[in-house]
Length: 120
Image (tube, rainbow, N blue to C red; front, top):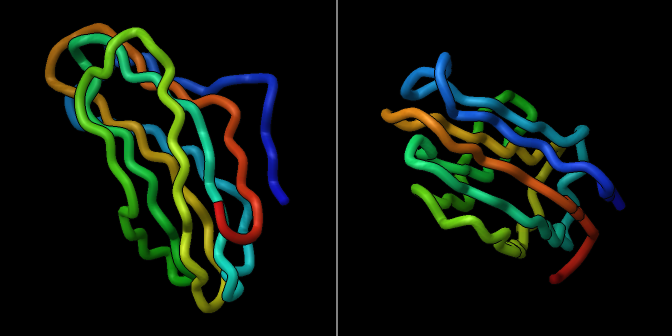
C-alpha cells in the first residue's frame, strides 16, 4: 500500500512556463502482480493555460503508456478520479504528467493520491 496525504502537488502554468513544458510526479517502483491496483486521487485544472493531465504506466524499460487523460480547464473545483490499474508483468511505476498550454495563467494540481492493491 502506498498513500500520500496531507499535501498537494501542483505545476503553475504562468509565465515563464512555455507551451508543451511538463512536470512529472512518479511513484516508487511497484511489482505489477496479477490483481492490479486501485489508483484514487483528486485533481484540479484551473486557468486558461492548462493543457493536459495524464496518468501513465512506466514499464521496466522506461516506456510509458497513457491510461487516462484530462484536457483543458475544469473550473475551480477539485475532481475525484478512481482508476483500476490492471495487473502487469514485472516492475511498474505510475506517472502523473501535467502539461502546460499555449496561454498564460493557471495550475494543475494533485491531492490525496492513494494506490491500493486490488479492485477499486
